[in-house]
Length: 49
Image (cartoon, rainbow, N blue to C red; front, side, top):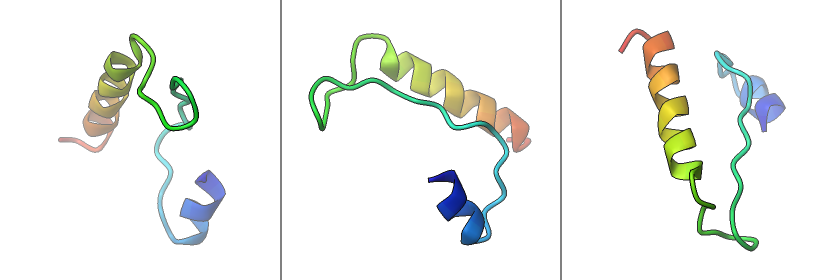
């Protein structure tokens, strides 16, 4: 996905992060929502928001 984003002109500001789901479509495993929220907060800080 990172290469596709770069090819489309996106600036990559963080390494990709993996999240675990139950089954092929989810729901997220226990603790993964908190992990995603923390990652989003970090990206917002890097973006100065």
